[in-house]
Image (tube, rainbow, N blue to C red; front, side, top):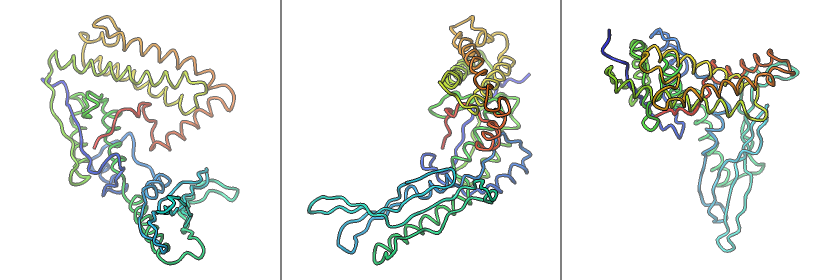
Length: 355
Protein backbone atom coordinates (compact mmCIF):
# COMPACT_ATOMS: atom_id res chain seq x y z
CA UNK A 1 0.00 0.00 0.00
CA UNK A 2 1.39 3.40 -1.00
CA UNK A 3 2.39 5.90 1.66
CA UNK A 4 1.33 8.68 -0.70
CA UNK A 5 -2.21 10.01 -0.95
CA UNK A 6 -1.58 11.80 -4.23
CA UNK A 7 0.16 14.84 -5.64
CA UNK A 8 -0.17 18.59 -5.32
CA UNK A 9 0.47 20.23 -8.66
CA UNK A 10 0.54 23.54 -10.43
CA UNK A 11 1.90 24.67 -13.78
CA UNK A 12 3.43 27.61 -15.58
CA UNK A 13 2.79 28.44 -19.22
CA UNK A 14 4.85 31.32 -20.63
CA UNK A 15 2.87 34.34 -21.79
CA UNK A 16 0.48 36.58 -19.91
CA UNK A 17 -2.95 35.01 -19.46
CA UNK A 18 -4.77 38.33 -19.28
CA UNK A 19 -3.30 39.42 -22.63
CA UNK A 20 -4.00 36.09 -24.32
CA UNK A 21 -0.47 36.06 -25.75
CA UNK A 22 0.49 33.49 -28.34
CA UNK A 23 2.87 30.63 -27.63
CA UNK A 24 5.32 29.11 -30.09
CA UNK A 25 3.30 25.91 -30.38
CA UNK A 26 1.09 25.14 -33.37
CA UNK A 27 -1.97 22.89 -33.20
CA UNK A 28 -0.20 20.32 -35.37
CA UNK A 29 2.80 20.29 -33.00
CA UNK A 30 0.52 19.87 -29.99
CA UNK A 31 -1.29 16.96 -31.66
CA UNK A 32 2.03 15.28 -32.46
CA UNK A 33 3.30 15.73 -28.89
CA UNK A 34 0.10 14.18 -27.50
CA UNK A 35 0.42 11.27 -29.94
CA UNK A 36 4.09 10.68 -29.08
CA UNK A 37 3.29 10.65 -25.35
CA UNK A 38 0.30 8.33 -25.95
CA UNK A 39 -2.01 10.63 -24.05
CA UNK A 40 -5.79 10.80 -24.38
CA UNK A 41 -6.87 14.40 -24.02
CA UNK A 42 -10.43 15.36 -23.00
CA UNK A 43 -10.09 18.57 -25.01
CA UNK A 44 -7.95 20.03 -27.76
CA UNK A 45 -7.96 23.58 -29.12
CA UNK A 46 -10.15 24.26 -32.12
CA UNK A 47 -9.72 26.95 -34.80
CA UNK A 48 -10.95 30.28 -33.43
CA UNK A 49 -10.51 32.66 -36.32
CA UNK A 50 -13.24 35.06 -35.19
CA UNK A 51 -11.62 35.32 -31.77
CA UNK A 52 -8.21 35.79 -33.42
CA UNK A 53 -9.59 38.55 -35.64
CA UNK A 54 -10.94 40.42 -32.63
CA UNK A 55 -7.77 39.87 -30.60
CA UNK A 56 -5.50 40.93 -33.45
CA UNK A 57 -7.47 44.07 -34.26
CA UNK A 58 -8.71 45.04 -30.80
CA UNK A 59 -5.56 46.61 -29.35
CA UNK A 60 -4.27 48.39 -32.43
CA UNK A 61 -3.30 52.00 -31.76
CA UNK A 62 -1.07 54.61 -33.37
CA UNK A 63 -0.39 58.21 -32.31
CA UNK A 64 1.00 60.82 -34.67
CA UNK A 65 0.79 64.47 -35.75
CA UNK A 66 -1.45 64.86 -38.79
CA UNK A 67 -1.01 67.20 -41.77
CA UNK A 68 -2.89 69.97 -39.91
CA UNK A 69 -0.51 69.84 -36.97
CA UNK A 70 -3.05 68.17 -34.67
CA UNK A 71 -2.26 65.27 -32.38
CA UNK A 72 -4.12 62.27 -33.80
CA UNK A 73 -4.79 58.76 -32.64
CA UNK A 74 -5.89 55.71 -34.62
CA UNK A 75 -7.99 53.03 -32.94
CA UNK A 76 -10.32 50.25 -34.05
CA UNK A 77 -13.98 49.99 -33.09
CA UNK A 78 -16.33 47.08 -33.74
CA UNK A 79 -19.44 48.36 -35.50
CA UNK A 80 -21.17 45.17 -36.61
CA UNK A 81 -21.17 41.46 -35.77
CA UNK A 82 -23.56 38.95 -37.37
CA UNK A 83 -23.59 35.22 -38.07
CA UNK A 84 -21.87 36.03 -41.38
CA UNK A 85 -19.24 38.65 -40.60
CA UNK A 86 -17.55 41.02 -38.13
CA UNK A 87 -16.75 44.61 -39.11
CA UNK A 88 -14.33 46.95 -37.39
CA UNK A 89 -13.58 50.53 -38.40
CA UNK A 90 -10.21 52.21 -38.14
CA UNK A 91 -11.08 55.60 -36.65
CA UNK A 92 -8.93 58.71 -36.40
CA UNK A 93 -9.55 60.84 -33.31
CA UNK A 94 -8.25 64.40 -33.06
CA UNK A 95 -8.68 67.14 -30.46
CA UNK A 96 -8.53 70.82 -31.37
CA UNK A 97 -6.21 72.41 -28.73
CA UNK A 98 -8.01 75.76 -28.97
CA UNK A 99 -11.64 74.64 -28.63
CA UNK A 100 -11.03 71.16 -27.15
CA UNK A 101 -13.48 69.87 -29.76
CA UNK A 102 -13.04 66.16 -30.44
CA UNK A 103 -13.62 64.81 -33.93
CA UNK A 104 -13.79 61.25 -35.24
CA UNK A 105 -13.23 60.12 -38.81
CA UNK A 106 -13.41 56.63 -40.33
CA UNK A 107 -10.29 55.99 -42.39
CA UNK A 108 -10.48 52.25 -43.09
CA UNK A 109 -12.54 49.12 -42.56
CA UNK A 110 -11.50 45.62 -41.47
CA UNK A 111 -13.95 42.82 -42.25
CA UNK A 112 -13.92 39.17 -41.20
CA UNK A 113 -16.17 36.60 -42.89
CA UNK A 114 -17.30 33.59 -40.86
CA UNK A 115 -17.55 30.13 -42.52
CA UNK A 116 -21.34 30.30 -42.70
CA UNK A 117 -23.79 28.18 -44.68
CA UNK A 118 -25.48 29.93 -47.61
CA UNK A 119 -27.86 28.95 -50.42
CA UNK A 120 -24.83 28.03 -52.53
CA UNK A 121 -23.35 25.86 -49.80
CA UNK A 122 -20.98 26.41 -46.93
CA UNK A 123 -18.11 28.84 -47.34
CA UNK A 124 -15.01 26.65 -47.13
CA UNK A 125 -13.41 28.67 -44.37
CA UNK A 126 -13.24 31.99 -42.60
CA UNK A 127 -11.40 34.82 -44.30
CA UNK A 128 -10.41 38.45 -43.82
CA UNK A 129 -11.24 40.72 -46.72
CA UNK A 130 -8.71 43.19 -48.08
CA UNK A 131 -8.84 46.29 -45.80
CA UNK A 132 -10.88 49.05 -47.42
CA UNK A 133 -9.20 52.44 -47.06
CA UNK A 134 -11.11 55.70 -47.35
CA UNK A 135 -11.12 56.89 -50.99
CA UNK A 136 -8.59 59.66 -51.55
CA UNK A 137 -6.71 58.97 -48.32
CA UNK A 138 -3.16 60.33 -48.62
CA UNK A 139 -0.27 61.84 -46.73
CA UNK A 140 0.57 60.99 -43.17
CA UNK A 141 -2.93 59.64 -42.51
CA UNK A 142 -2.51 57.06 -45.29
CA UNK A 143 0.97 56.11 -44.03
CA UNK A 144 -0.27 55.56 -40.48
CA UNK A 145 -3.33 53.58 -41.57
CA UNK A 146 -1.24 51.33 -43.84
CA UNK A 147 1.20 50.75 -40.95
CA UNK A 148 -1.65 49.91 -38.57
CA UNK A 149 -3.19 47.50 -41.09
CA UNK A 150 0.20 45.81 -41.48
CA UNK A 151 0.43 45.41 -37.69
CA UNK A 152 -2.99 43.76 -37.83
CA UNK A 153 -1.95 41.40 -40.64
CA UNK A 154 1.13 40.23 -38.75
CA UNK A 155 -0.76 39.83 -35.46
CA UNK A 156 -3.63 37.93 -37.09
CA UNK A 157 -1.29 35.62 -39.01
CA UNK A 158 0.62 34.85 -35.79
CA UNK A 159 -2.57 34.03 -33.91
CA UNK A 160 -3.81 31.83 -36.76
CA UNK A 161 -0.51 29.92 -36.73
CA UNK A 162 0.28 29.54 -33.04
CA UNK A 163 -1.89 28.59 -30.08
CA UNK A 164 -2.47 31.16 -27.38
CA UNK A 165 -1.11 30.67 -23.88
CA UNK A 166 -4.72 30.61 -22.70
CA UNK A 167 -5.49 27.67 -25.02
CA UNK A 168 -2.52 25.69 -23.71
CA UNK A 169 -3.49 26.39 -20.11
CA UNK A 170 -6.96 25.10 -20.83
CA UNK A 171 -5.57 21.87 -22.34
CA UNK A 172 -3.53 21.26 -19.20
CA UNK A 173 -6.32 22.19 -16.80
CA UNK A 174 -8.88 20.01 -18.56
CA UNK A 175 -6.53 17.03 -18.47
CA UNK A 176 -5.99 17.50 -14.73
CA UNK A 177 -9.68 18.08 -13.92
CA UNK A 178 -11.46 15.83 -16.42
CA UNK A 179 -9.00 13.01 -17.12
CA UNK A 180 -7.35 12.77 -13.69
CA UNK A 181 -10.30 13.73 -11.40
CA UNK A 182 -8.26 16.60 -9.99
CA UNK A 183 -9.76 19.16 -7.63
CA UNK A 184 -8.72 22.72 -6.90
CA UNK A 185 -7.15 23.10 -3.45
CA UNK A 186 -6.20 26.77 -3.58
CA UNK A 187 -7.75 29.11 -6.14
CA UNK A 188 -5.30 31.91 -5.37
CA UNK A 189 -2.23 29.89 -6.30
CA UNK A 190 -3.87 27.50 -8.72
CA UNK A 191 -2.85 24.40 -6.76
CA UNK A 192 -4.64 21.14 -7.55
CA UNK A 193 -4.76 17.71 -5.93
CA UNK A 194 -4.70 14.49 -7.98
CA UNK A 195 -4.96 10.91 -6.74
CA UNK A 196 -1.75 8.84 -6.67
CA UNK A 197 -3.27 6.41 -9.19
CA UNK A 198 -2.77 9.06 -11.89
CA UNK A 199 0.97 9.47 -11.22
CA UNK A 200 1.98 8.10 -14.64
CA UNK A 201 -0.50 10.37 -16.40
CA UNK A 202 0.95 13.38 -14.58
CA UNK A 203 4.47 12.38 -15.60
CA UNK A 204 3.35 12.38 -19.23
CA UNK A 205 1.60 15.72 -18.72
CA UNK A 206 4.79 17.16 -17.26
CA UNK A 207 6.71 16.16 -20.40
CA UNK A 208 4.01 17.73 -22.55
CA UNK A 209 4.08 21.06 -20.68
CA UNK A 210 7.88 21.15 -20.71
CA UNK A 211 7.81 20.67 -24.50
CA UNK A 212 5.75 23.86 -24.87
CA UNK A 213 8.99 25.81 -24.54
CA UNK A 214 11.05 27.95 -22.14
CA UNK A 215 9.19 29.12 -19.07
CA UNK A 216 6.74 26.20 -19.18
CA UNK A 217 6.65 23.48 -16.56
CA UNK A 218 4.49 21.27 -14.35
CA UNK A 219 5.38 21.07 -10.67
CA UNK A 220 4.49 18.09 -8.45
CA UNK A 221 4.78 17.60 -4.70
CA UNK A 222 3.86 14.15 -3.30
CA UNK A 223 1.31 14.35 -0.49
CA UNK A 224 1.87 11.99 2.45
CA UNK A 225 -1.17 9.91 3.38
CA UNK A 226 -2.25 10.91 6.89
CA UNK A 227 -5.40 12.21 8.60
CA UNK A 228 -4.57 15.91 8.27
CA UNK A 229 -3.94 15.63 4.50
CA UNK A 230 -7.15 13.64 4.01
CA UNK A 231 -9.03 16.34 5.90
CA UNK A 232 -7.54 19.02 3.63
CA UNK A 233 -8.58 17.14 0.49
CA UNK A 234 -12.07 16.49 1.89
CA UNK A 235 -12.59 20.17 2.68
CA UNK A 236 -11.45 21.17 -0.80
CA UNK A 237 -13.82 18.62 -2.33
CA UNK A 238 -16.75 20.10 -0.43
CA UNK A 239 -15.90 23.55 -1.83
CA UNK A 240 -15.71 22.19 -5.39
CA UNK A 241 -19.08 20.43 -5.05
CA UNK A 242 -20.82 23.45 -3.50
CA UNK A 243 -19.40 25.88 -6.05
CA UNK A 244 -20.37 23.83 -9.10
CA UNK A 245 -23.79 22.92 -7.69
CA UNK A 246 -24.48 26.61 -7.19
CA UNK A 247 -23.76 27.20 -10.88
CA UNK A 248 -26.00 24.29 -11.91
CA UNK A 249 -28.88 25.71 -9.85
CA UNK A 250 -28.33 29.16 -11.34
CA UNK A 251 -28.59 27.79 -14.89
CA UNK A 252 -31.47 25.38 -14.28
CA UNK A 253 -33.57 27.93 -12.39
CA UNK A 254 -33.14 30.73 -14.92
CA UNK A 255 -36.35 31.77 -16.77
CA UNK A 256 -35.42 30.30 -20.17
CA UNK A 257 -32.30 28.10 -20.03
CA UNK A 258 -31.08 27.01 -23.45
CA UNK A 259 -30.68 23.41 -24.54
CA UNK A 260 -26.91 23.78 -24.47
CA UNK A 261 -26.92 25.25 -20.96
CA UNK A 262 -29.05 22.40 -19.62
CA UNK A 263 -26.94 19.80 -21.36
CA UNK A 264 -23.78 21.26 -19.86
CA UNK A 265 -25.44 21.43 -16.45
CA UNK A 266 -26.31 17.74 -16.67
CA UNK A 267 -22.78 16.98 -17.77
CA UNK A 268 -21.45 18.88 -14.77
CA UNK A 269 -23.83 17.02 -12.45
CA UNK A 270 -22.60 13.66 -13.74
CA UNK A 271 -19.03 14.77 -13.20
CA UNK A 272 -19.75 15.70 -9.59
CA UNK A 273 -21.22 12.27 -8.96
CA UNK A 274 -18.10 10.68 -10.46
CA UNK A 275 -16.00 12.83 -8.14
CA UNK A 276 -18.14 11.69 -5.23
CA UNK A 277 -17.50 8.03 -6.00
CA UNK A 278 -13.83 8.57 -6.77
CA UNK A 279 -13.03 10.43 -3.56
CA UNK A 280 -15.21 8.20 -1.40
CA UNK A 281 -13.04 5.30 -2.55
CA UNK A 282 -9.85 7.31 -2.03
CA UNK A 283 -10.61 8.79 1.38
CA UNK A 284 -12.42 5.77 2.81
CA UNK A 285 -15.37 5.46 5.14
CA UNK A 286 -13.74 7.74 7.72
CA UNK A 287 -14.30 10.68 5.41
CA UNK A 288 -17.52 9.54 3.80
CA UNK A 289 -19.35 12.19 5.83
CA UNK A 290 -18.28 14.61 3.13
CA UNK A 291 -21.10 13.12 1.08
CA UNK A 292 -23.72 11.92 3.54
CA UNK A 293 -23.52 15.09 5.63
CA UNK A 294 -23.51 13.58 9.13
CA UNK A 295 -20.33 15.06 10.60
CA UNK A 296 -18.50 18.37 10.89
CA UNK A 297 -21.06 20.48 9.06
CA UNK A 298 -20.36 18.84 5.70
CA UNK A 299 -24.07 18.76 5.04
CA UNK A 300 -23.24 21.65 2.71
CA UNK A 301 -22.07 19.19 0.05
CA UNK A 302 -25.01 16.83 0.48
CA UNK A 303 -27.53 19.67 0.45
CA UNK A 304 -25.89 21.28 -2.57
CA UNK A 305 -26.00 18.03 -4.55
CA UNK A 306 -29.64 17.46 -3.66
CA UNK A 307 -30.68 21.00 -4.58
CA UNK A 308 -28.80 20.86 -7.89
CA UNK A 309 -30.31 17.50 -8.89
CA UNK A 310 -33.82 18.57 -7.89
CA UNK A 311 -33.61 21.89 -9.74
CA UNK A 312 -32.12 20.26 -12.83
CA UNK A 313 -34.82 17.56 -12.84
CA UNK A 314 -37.53 20.21 -12.63
CA UNK A 315 -36.05 22.01 -15.64
CA UNK A 316 -35.94 18.87 -17.82
CA UNK A 317 -39.60 18.84 -19.02
CA UNK A 318 -39.29 22.41 -20.31
CA UNK A 319 -36.15 21.43 -22.15
CA UNK A 320 -37.62 18.41 -23.93
CA UNK A 321 -41.00 19.84 -24.93
CA UNK A 322 -41.40 21.30 -28.42
CA UNK A 323 -38.78 22.54 -30.88
CA UNK A 324 -37.64 19.00 -31.69
CA UNK A 325 -37.47 17.62 -28.15
CA UNK A 326 -34.50 15.36 -27.34
CA UNK A 327 -33.15 15.60 -30.89
CA UNK A 328 -32.72 19.34 -30.47
CA UNK A 329 -30.92 18.70 -27.19
CA UNK A 330 -28.60 16.28 -28.93
CA UNK A 331 -27.87 18.73 -31.74
CA UNK A 332 -27.30 21.50 -29.19
CA UNK A 333 -24.85 19.24 -27.37
CA UNK A 334 -22.95 18.65 -30.59
CA UNK A 335 -22.82 22.40 -31.19
CA UNK A 336 -21.46 22.88 -27.68
CA UNK A 337 -18.94 20.11 -28.26
CA UNK A 338 -17.69 21.79 -31.43
CA UNK A 339 -17.64 25.24 -29.85
CA UNK A 340 -15.73 24.14 -26.74
CA UNK A 341 -13.02 22.14 -28.40
CA UNK A 342 -14.52 18.72 -29.09
CA UNK A 343 -15.85 17.88 -25.65
CA UNK A 344 -18.58 18.92 -23.28
CA UNK A 345 -16.84 21.06 -20.65
CA UNK A 346 -17.66 21.14 -16.98
CA UNK A 347 -20.01 23.98 -16.22
CA UNK A 348 -17.51 25.72 -14.00
CA UNK A 349 -15.41 27.87 -16.21
CA UNK A 350 -14.81 29.34 -12.77
CA UNK A 351 -11.80 27.22 -11.96
CA UNK A 352 -8.98 29.51 -13.00
CA UNK A 353 -6.29 28.99 -15.59
CA UNK A 354 -2.87 30.13 -14.49
CA UNK A 355 0.23 31.63 -15.92
